[in-house]
Length: 193
Length: 193
Image 1 (cartoon, rainbow over the protein chains, first blue to last red):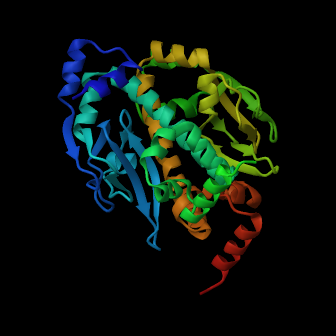
Image 2 (image 1 turned 45 degrees about the horizontal axis):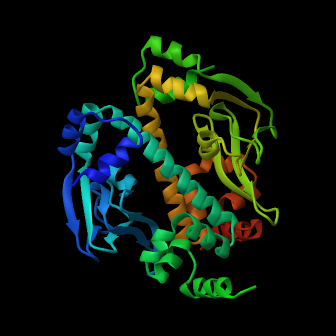
Image 3 (image 1 turned 45 degrees about the vertical axis):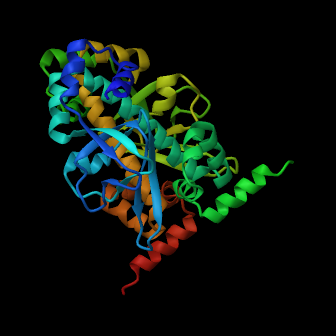
């Protein structure tokens, strides 16, 4: 079940057959049913997960009990709490399956070993993390400088496949607005001008 | 003038004398006076900059003319618009020196060559970008879930050296709040309870 992962890696670096075989050993296949957790806040994030199939979200809960969605991850995406994974500190995030999902997990020890045994994974991960950083910076900058309506339109343009598969209140939580505000924006956008 | 850069690199990977010599060739020293720009929005970000000395900020301006600060960069930090640098698209950000600064610049061609000629820089950059991603994710998550006062307290705890060197209205812009709100928070914090 490593096809999606290897295809993803090969968009960034070449892999020999031998390297594919070596990489296979570092990943543990894992199935999650909808609503099961990969990580619960307060626990240490032991795995970085590649999504072969399905959909997950990471989120944090504030003192008032409100959920704030940090990330969605579809097929062909990675998800984890990098801070907790790398430091061994408890995570402030939870990671939950929103659909039945098939994951490939790698733990910290295997992650470090993989980078020594297949050094070109340094390049793959550098490019991957670089792209994540760009996306996260743009989201932060949009959150600081754009209106809720503009942020919603950008999300439709960039990730319409996520919007189709996720309940509206989670889209609102991802945008950092109330479900009522999102509902108002959607009505305005649906009204012919 | 590469001392701070090499010290920074050596906290993450070992460098031989020969590699230091090779790396030197990829970087262009550049001085900026206070208020000079490394990048103006609408231009392509041609360089990624390492700060040997001084202080810079990157920011974006919204349609209403309000500035939103994306990042501060002190000595020993990197700054650029990674998206524009890697894609060659015009940048939405400006990067300005807030103090007289000494930089080491690397352009895209040299960046790619460096990764081929000194492959351990893949590892250095992977770790660097990974740490930036963690910091940016935490800032986004704080922005979504914490109050302005909590965000200001976290900034003091993490980056008091920046707060000491930057005008208050820029701290407010970084936090995504008005200068009046920041002033009110500071007064409340100064009042004995």
